[in-house]
Each structure stands twice: as C-alpha cells, then as structure tokens.
Length: 397
Image 1 (tube, one colour):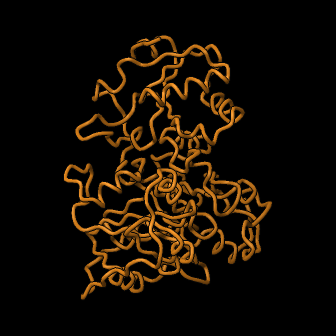
Image 2 (image 1 turned 60 degrees about the vertical axis):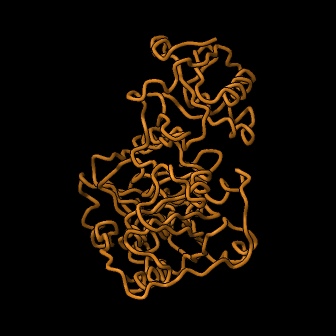
Image 3 (image 1 turned 90 degrees about the vertical axis):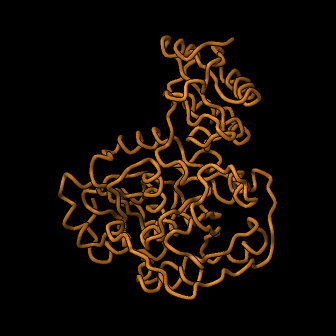
C-alpha cells in the first residue's frame, strides 16, 4: 500500500528511511539529486538487518515507540524497503505502507548540519578517480590517512588504496597522552605535506583513533578535516579494493605552512576548575557509566576511579575504546536528533558552552567531532580528562 507524506503525519505514523546514513544525512544519491530525509523520519538502513537479530530489531522498534498498531511508512530504494518490510513483519509490525512522494519536495527535507564532514566509501572512490561532478569536492589538494595506535602491521596487511599511515603518537604523547606541543604538530603536518587548505580525510580500525587525530588537526589549523563514516569497516563492507604494503610516504613541504591554531578548541585544567560551577558551561564525561559512577577507572594505568564533580554523563560505550552509544550497527554515526536526545536526557544542550572529556581524549574527540557535524558551535575538548584530573584530586561526583 502507498500513502503520501501528509497522511503519515495526520495518522501519527512513523516514517522509516531505509537508505544508508550518508544519504539520510544529506549526501545526494546521484548528481543533482535531492538531499536529506523527510522531517521526522528515523533511519533503519536495510543493510543493518544482516547484523540485527529479531530481538535487537524489536528492541529498536520499541525505542522508536513503534508498536504493532503504529502506521509505518517506508521510504528509500524499493529493494531496501522490501527487505525492511519483511523483517518488520517478523516483529509483528503489519500496518506498513510505502511513501509515494518521498524526497519530492526538496524544501521540506532535513540534513545533518555539516554532513560533508562525514564521507562515505563510494564518495571516496569517486574522489580517487577524479570525478568531475563530485559533490562537496575538496577545494584544494587532499590526503587520505589511516590513523591508529601501533597498528602499522595491520595497515600493511590491507588498507584503502592511496592511504598513508599515521600513528597517533605523532599527534599525542605521554605522560598524559595529551596533544603534542604546537611546534611538533606543525612539523608533523609539514612532513605529511599538509597545508591549512589541504582536505584531510581520516579513517581508522577503531571507533575513535581517526576522530582523535581529526580534532587535533582542527586545533592545529587544518580547515577541512573529514572522517570516513564507519571507518575501515565501512570500506570492507562495501567490498571495495584494498592494497597491501607500507604505502607511499607523503612528500614533505619545503617550508613550514602558516597555520593558525584554534586555541579555543582545547581547554586546560585551570579552565575546567573555574567553569565547573558555572551554569553557562556544561562539562561532559564521555565515558562508560561504570567509569562515571566511580566503579572503575576504565584504564590499567589510571588508579583513581570517579569523575569530575559536576560533570554530566555524555554516554559512550562499555569500555574505554568504545563510543558504541553514538553508532549505528554498521559503525556510522547515529541520527543527529537521536544523539541530541541522548545528550538532552543528561542535561547537555548546544545553547551552552559544552566541554567534552574522557580518560585521555579519544572518546571525547569522537563526541566533539559528531557535535561539530551536528552544527554545535561552542564546543571544546578538555584534553587532560580524567587522567590529568585524577592525578590532582581523587574527588568523585
């Protein structure tokens, strides 16, 4: 059965967009195509069903307030719609329709505020092949980097063609694993052939390594930093070619580029101490709930358990390398409205200054990058995080 957009709204129905998140967020599926999703639509990409059992799918439906009697209108590519419809029926959802005017009114569609900062695999392929009609193409030269901590051997076994490897120790270091001093960051950028106008595209094999490097590059003054949404996993799932070996080394620049660091993007312990009691500033702990509640420090090398007094819990995942709460089943960023609602439930809103932190900066970098993609403006990273704070005090919230 088919129905129009107005009918779904009038009957308190739910729209499910079955396309991949990149197109839901705003990337056009073809040159000159419409961008974004229908207002109020939730995203359930048909490809996620391969990793979602019926119990998980039914739980997801409940989280979206979709009951057996809820009218559900599907929109997207027809094969995807049919796959989703079949699985929904297995979960007892039978009041199903297909939206017959989906994406036909461009002015009503919604997009992620800065969706080009999250690229997808086939866009990257088109970039590599020099597609003349590439949407959101880099304005100058571009580089592709795989980021990881001590994972050069994995990179050598197989990586995205043309990618160079960047160990995270080239941007951060001990004892606190904070970002390196500006002079060292600038030298790293020179060695990588990166200028302020270079578009840097990053991916990693973990949830957070690429985001960690991305935020430090933004701080350093690189204007256009993007993440491959879903990382290495998304490239593999797309069945795209890989290459092996140590890769090509970038050509260093002959002179040091004129970078202007964004000093407001990183804050230190003294600023956090001064802001803790100010209602205009929200301090966000991007850690597991067990870490936030002081049941564990989350790290073998951090002794003290607890959290910074007054911090709001920003969610993350079950361990110190995970931001699963922010991710779809394929590792891409969840819907902006869903992430905003998750944070709003903890008293975190974009109208205030929001300072993210975690243990040593990785998970907080992912949260900050996603908030930036959502259009949040007054955001910063407390790089020292719980590791630095706990060395000065063991007070918990």
